[in-house]
Image (cartoon, rainbow, N blue to C red):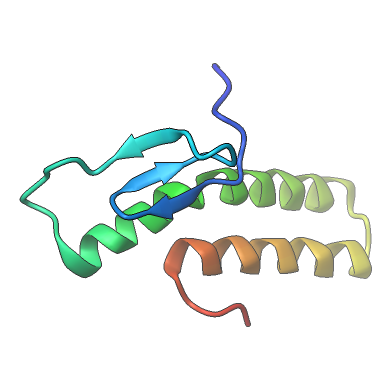
Length: 91
């Protein structure tokens, strides 16, 4: 599997950018998707590196049975990544 552009990614207008401000992808002139749906799609794309990292971390914690503190850290990472993807405040 090929590597993805390292995160963090962010949304700037209709473009997802990496930490250096370089374009990862752009919504361009897609007239089929506008407003809240476009914003939600861009947030989800921008959160992809954090979601992957949190999922890999949680899987490692669960696989090794590392205990309550490690499990709580995994949940915190997952919550932060989910909040970034959905635009909701962190719990």
